[in-house]
Length: 157
Image (tube, rainbow, N blue to C red; front, side, top):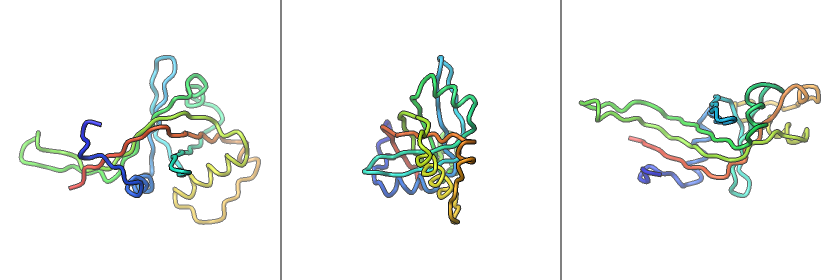
């Protein structure tokens, strides 16, 4: 990371970024063609390891790319606003961001799908009981991104 003065390493600060973001941009690449898509997400930390969950239709471009190449990257950010100055070169951006990469797979077992969907709905603010009937599970795919490395940054004024 070039701007180590903006690097965040405190797990609580990083989790605050995750909690504050409502969109994660997922980057995939297959056949030399990049693809980035904004998605809602859920997440969990287990033994210091971050896992992101997404949902999608049972067919489409994301699944085609993942079938060809399970490597993925992600980016999310929050607290964005311009920091103005007297000259254009003095302007900056206030932000907090998290980005990383890992391997993405499809949830295989119904329990893993339920877990991913529950985390996604909880992150979105749903507070009721979460029931996902088998028919609903059969209609969607749940993507599981096991994050292997990440970096977090902030520019706060």
